[in-house]
Amino acid sequence: MILFDVLVGFNITTCYNTNMQNNILDYMDASFENFPDKTAFSNGTVHVTFRDVKAQSDSIGTYLFDMKISHRPIIVFMSKHPQTVIAFFGVVRGGNFYVPLDAEMPRIRIDYIISNLSPKLMICDEKTFDIAGTLNFSGRILKYNDICQYEINSEALREINDSTIDTDPVYIVYTSGSTGTPKGVVACHRSVIDYIEQLSSALKFNNETVFGNQTPLYFDACLKELYPTLKFGATTYLIPAELFMQPIKLAEFLNEHRINTICWVVSAMTMISAFNTFDTIIPAYLSSVNFGSEVFPIKEFRKWRAALPNAVFINLYGPTECTGMCCYFVVNDLKEDAETIPIGKPFKNTDIIILNENNERVACGEAGEICVRGTSLSLGYFNDINKTNEVFVQNPLNNHYPELIYRTGDIGYQDSNKDIIFCSRKDHQIKHMGHRIELGEIEASIYRLKEIKMACCIYDNIKNKIRLYYVGDISKKDLTVKIKELLPRYMHPNTIIQLTKMPLTANGKIDRNELKIKEISY
Image 1 (cartoon, rainbow, N blue to C red):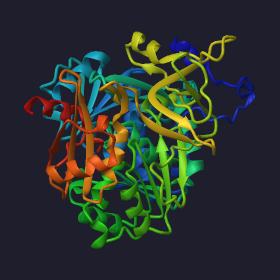
Image 2: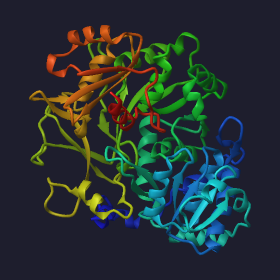
Image 3: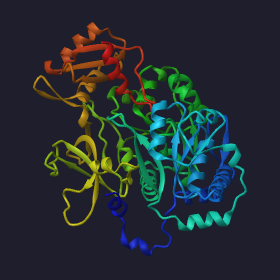
Image 4: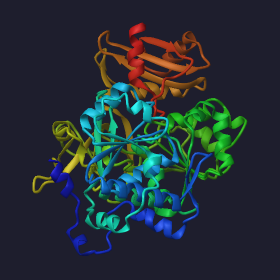
């Protein structure tokens, strides 16, 4: 079935287009020619130019060529740093695909990924080299500094480039989703190029774009900054993770480096607005504010809109399995009674199909599972054909030829403007007291209260109880009274727990798995 994915969406006429881009690093070569001494990536302290990126990635690529490692997964086990980004590109330059790991990841997760990959090589920095030696890894461990100045063999790199086809993998990123078991999503040059082209067109990136990266580099979300930076000769600042716990210092960092574009998860944005950061400081240079991965509470969005009235706000939606975001909605003025922000319409060259339980296309206004088809689909899960075949399936609306769709597990519907409205995850839909309930609907109602900063509902399947966790300036007793005014009785949480701090994943999203663990103590 993965083979079908490789074929789906390939336009036979492109065979005759000798100028068709088939390697993501063509972006890098062009920006090196046009902006050699411009800063490409920085963490605020270390700055690397496009000349640095080109030279060091070519050195790494040559080293891999000389080691005769080709078309293999190579682990990049490094801290969040500009050199880590160069290591990614170096792996691809050498005709391989990178797998990012980080020391902040749980050891059990790292062990699983290594077991799943059986990699031959790991690239480390000075901080992670010693840790790497304690891992259950039998391949060769290299230090970045030992290979980034390796003598470049331009002829060898040209040979690799000429032999690259657009269905060769670029990276594997591991996502666990609701199961807790890591799944290695394999993305190829074709899907990444298509994603970057469509994303850049929709969000209007250019060579004056200055990105502020929020996500760790072992998530696919960083694609939104890394590859457009190469494409346009833009600049990306890798914002230190600790600043997201210090909203005022975070805003100061944005202003100091004149960052004008962000693509963040919603929790990272509410961390700023919910704690009244805008009363002290405004990110004055932000003109493009893009968000996704979670539902943005309307009251928090309005705070951002009020603070940055001239900025363009775009809601993004898309799963890792579709190489990043696949839908977008430009948020202009929201109606006063608006309850949610649409995820909008698909990018060009992507199609969204909403199917009911009988695999039929739903009518407008009817909810169903959001399914994606097109070039944006990744190749599937590494070393997991069974899991791949569960969600990358034949389009049930097409019985004439092989055509894969990806079943996202998300529930949504199309409104009268043909914009898609996200409702919830299938696994966040519960049956409680004889009623079908969307946990997201409870959360959205709670977020309307001005005292609530963050909220999350978890369903205890054993005790058949709804648990509400929240951070806010309201007592549990007063919140219980408010909930009775907001929700019908069957949707009332059975247990309400006030937290001083909401647990977040490394990506900045609310950590629902951690909250499920907390259930044991209540």
